[in-house]
Every structure is written in structure tokens, then in C-alpha cells.
Length: 294
Image (cartoon, rainbow, N blue to C red; front, side, top):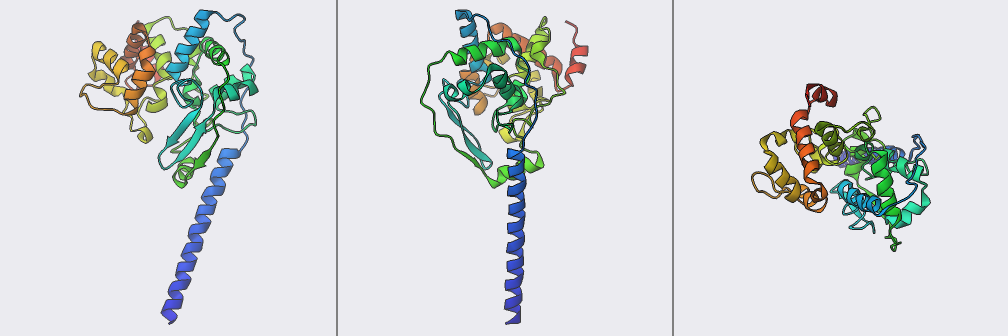
């Protein structure tokens, strides 16, 4: 009898301990999600006049970086974003959100993941978008603002226990947490060589899935981009146009991204990306640049 009572006490203490741990994880992760941040609201000069060419290029870049045919749906109408076991959320309808932001506020949201209320966005790939140059942002914003209103999707956000733990361990970062402010903004530096042009394009696209250091990301199952060394220029062009690797297997998300977004790259842009990745090979960018003799 005493043994049974002791077992019940131990079970109750264990259950209470588990509940305390779960409550602590929830409280700490809520603080991460709702704390206020600071990021500069820098002046941003919008396009004085918007030409048809500006809108066309804005549409092309919106697809390449994922504003369209990405988390926000095929044409910005809203969509879903999720990592299994971590979170599910609704990416908003862009025509519903954009009017609430001035251009400088929108640029801050894109580059730093900071919403108007001072909290961080979730799922916005600001660590990748941070490098976007002003000219590309001007055209993307002009294109997005020119779209007709669409009915707003219903917004939902669910953060699972696995995601909350990942937030606290650093395995998963908020949009603001993804941004490395020490990194150069490659889009604002000269792009007068194949290496520099490729570096910029890689920084605003490949880093989303392969990491800022291009070393791969476990959560996406993406490899280090050292693998480019195995590709000839022709096979690399085929990979980015079709998402088909050397061994012909289905590489999932990359296959979809290549066909929906990277197919919008020009041949020259793909050649520039190839040049950069063959030199970079996961070396620090400044080292790789020093080694490159254009």
C-alpha cells in the first residue's frame, strides 16, 4: 500500500515537473515571438516614374525571390508556410498588407523582418532578403503595389512544441533572428564582374535553403553548395532550369523552385551564379573574392 502511494507521489511530482518545463518553454518562446526589436527606418526613394520595363522586371524578381510563386501564393493572393512539427502559418494576401506599410516600413519588414508593431515576423526570409539592392526592391515594390486587390485569406499561426524548443535552442530563428547585420549588403556594392553578380544572386536566393554560409540546412535537407564542383556549366544550367540533379533523382523543393522561379533567370545570370559558387566553395566571401582573379 505504501509502495503504491509512493509511486503515485513520484508520478505526480514527475507530471508536475513536466508541466513546469512545458510552461517554461511556452513562456520563454512567447517572449521570443512577442518581444520588441529595433531596426533602422532608413529613407527609401521609390521610383519617380514607373515604366512597363520596371514592372516587368519587378514581376520577374518577385518570382525569383519568392514573393510570387512562393509563400504568398502564385500571385500574392496568400498562401501557407510550414515546417513539419515546428509551425504552420498563413502568409498574408499582399494586396491586403502592403497598403498598411509605407515604402520605408515595407523595406524594413523585408530586410529586417520587423513588423510595424515592433515585433518580428515569422517565416519572412529576411536573412536572405537583407542583401537585396534598392533598385531591385523599388521594382518589386512597384510591381506588387500595382496589382489589383485580392480577397484577404484568413490568417492562422500555430507554433508546435518542437518549434518552440527550436526557437529556444537557436535551431530555428525568427525573421529578425535570421538577419546578420554584419554581412555586407551585396546589392549595394558594385556588380561589375561575373563573380560579384553571382554573389549577389546567390545571396538573395540560394541562402534561404542552403544557409548564409552555403553549408546546407538540416531542416530543409539541403546540401552544402560544394556539390556544384561536380557540375559542368551545362549541367548546372540544366539543374537551375529543371531541378534535375546529376543522378536524376527527385530533389523535392529544389525541383519545384527551379521550375517555378529559377527558370526566370537569364542564361547569363546562371553562368554568373556558377562562377561564384565554383570559387566560393564554402570559403568566407572575402577570402573567396581575394582568391578570384577576374
